[in-house]
Length: 430
Length: 164
Image (cartoon, rainbow over all chains, first blue to last red; front, side):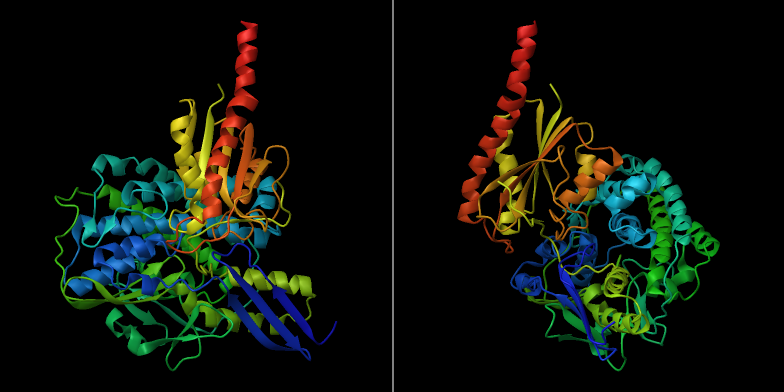
């Protein structure tokens, strides 16, 4: 095998957005690792300037087709902080319920359709479906349940239209939410089965040493609220985020790379969330984590599917709890008046912490917006892991090593940038 | 009549990506009530639910294949697997082609299913559809009407009439 090798994956499959991976090996050593993002920058922060604050949830929802709720939630919480209002009671619960729907959708697809084929030895979920139809049907059923929550609470299954600064445009009736109970009870059973299934897979060995960063809340497993904490003592509010973190442009990528000042690399997402919040799991999720032998902290990114499976259980359990305890609010939203201010918020998207910051003028127009998505926070860690993984597996041939690298990137469930779709054909037919 | 669904797929905020939705909107008032015309955001996994119960399905979507913008491609998805890369680089989790092939593997493919693709060129945010693609909407609608009414159902209807 040549000492000089170049591994290139021009299009990363089963990754949200468009990206590529490039690894160069020279003289038997890994010389360069780049995860390239080449969809044009999205300019969302610029789009938001001059817009009325009320528009932000609907504009930012379009950043991602998989985690629009995360963008909406970070947006409304940051804007509410700027405007000095607090949303609680049933409206707060509905927001958490909506987030549960997104976690269920996103995690179900990732665990079964994107990641399981890697560990069962199939090139895609389509190939896997022929031999394992039940797994795929389970995934579709879970995804459908997440979609139902999104539709009932958010108005439609992707890019919800019902989220508003101050609450919602319309709140569901108790009867409407009750229609979700039976599918969620089935989904909960499927989620536990999912975790048991995920635990039967064989994962490559890899131990990460990144700083693990996630939100932490006094009572809840974090979704919408909490302070940003790490396994190395970080403990800050959203307002302090930019004192501690910075974004920089990497020449090979259109996405900004984020770093925690004074540290090498850090990781956000399920591994970090679970490591820092295992004691906040719901009862069945905790029992499931114990049953499948999920270690704490889990530092093998290939085992992140186990964490997602446990979080699926948690999201179903939480959704049921929130629906059963729901009391219809008198108003769909808290009254909001425009005023000058700055607001910050962090929430936990399925793939990690998402930070938003907004400056508003006297009329409630957005003067400045800053959005730091989880994938740009994980890019440095992703490249570091690829470097470590390739270094340890140089004996593999190019095809095998390339496949393993693709799998390693899928560990992060990256959302490189999206909100469009198109078909791509090698051969045109007309 | 076979329950029939025409599903216009796209994103209204991304230039030419809206063409599937535009075709659906133009077509809707022109079809009899046994043909459902719906719009869809394109989530592949949800497509399988969207077409459940329909015996005949046409998916109308933006295409980026390198042919001339505005050109229309008709693929019989039942007859042969869709090209491996059709939708392979989609920014959706599960693209249209993957959804169709997943349904085929699971035995959930409608009895008849076709894809009407319109070649697109500009997916810029908040941009209108390009002139070439906007001009293709009427042609796509005409093709759909021809395929749904004349090629399939008019003859069936005539047969049924003849038999009576």
